[in-house]
Length: 67
Picture 1 (cartoon, rainbow, N blue to C red):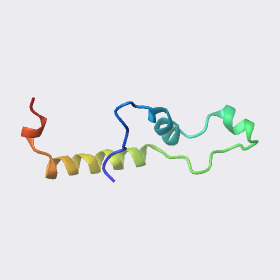
Picture 2 (picture 1 turned 135 degrees about the horizontal axis):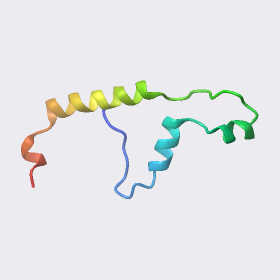
Picture 3 (picture 1 turned 135 degrees about the vertical axis):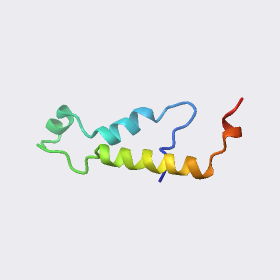
Picture 4 (picture 1 turned 60 degrees about the vertical axis):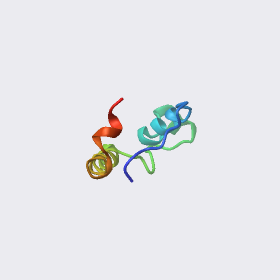
């Protein structure tokens, strides 16, 4: 896992944000739950970023980034 797939239209950007942010207090109140279940934290995001950096350093080529 080294990236979060997002289309060029960015349609799923809010869903990705919601997935990693967890439910809002209003959402929790609506379902009568006091604490989020399965909330993702920064540790998972950092893992994806670290793996992406490793992948880039081993697979990516500078010539591919040049215009």
